[in-house]
Length: 416
Image (cartoon, rainbow, N blue to C red; front, top):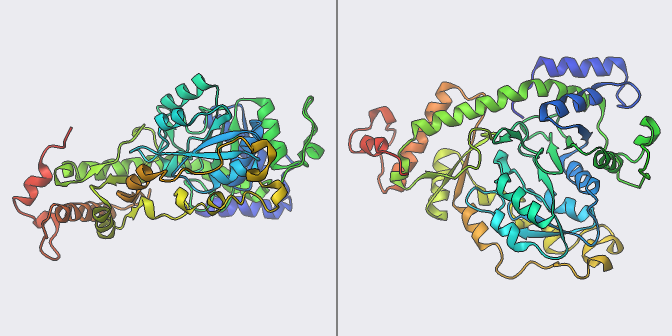
């Protein structure tokens, strides 16, 4: 959670004072947020839900994904992505990421089989996937694209908002996300029929409150509708998100300018697919090896990407054990419709992804970093880079106190 204040408290108070916490029949906060967020994204429809996992599942159901379908997912994503595939009755096919820490378009193309129906590019940690390449692959193969923008709220790819380039996009408004109501999510699409299916997946009772669209037969789905409290808080957060992302981009730019030339000390920034448009939630460095990454993370307060738990496929218990549902008869791995699908992870798969993650260090960008915070981060990154180069600065030495040749190393031109 980045920024909250009296505006959120006042919005919540108004809803509580009204006594109208249920979203239907009042044209209230949830409806207002859906309309405003759809306009911001530039899409025709937005549907609010109770979590990002709900949003992903509803998006897949909205797209018609189900038993008999394979859905390609990246080896690095929160486990909600493959779990949503299983919740829809389909089978997740895991593919490698590339150096950008997002799904590798070449790996997507190589993994397409006769039963592959969709791909989920995940804008992990606010980092856009290479959407031009992914859309080209998907169009050639006739795949449905469902974007997982749960960690990419407020970001874009070359001017196009994340979650708006595929058939659907899914968002999370969890406590840890760029825009939050504590817990929550949303689905965005330009397809009215797809949006209506997603609404039914989110809330099968919504027909009773808003009427039934012609041509859609209601189906059973798990209730995951949002409350007016969630909508109220998100309406305030929507006013903040532009400033939050802009601040993170500026902070990252400042740190990159301050640490320019560190590639000469064995440190380089991880490649970005759309650096002028992404969320800039993290400053990510690619270290030479895992040991260097661990030392660098400790010295800078960063996090090794491969040590974030459920974001790496080797920690997805439900997928690894093929426990895809609460009851064996509903387990996609045991469904007759999925008998011909690729259900096992090949031996030795994912080594490339794991190596990338174990040497990538993420330094979080807080939109409210002070000048002192940024100077401290810059200082720590520089000192850690010196240590990577085999030098040990004197204890307590600040950057301003460094002398040649240390300063000359920092001021050397960047590679490339």
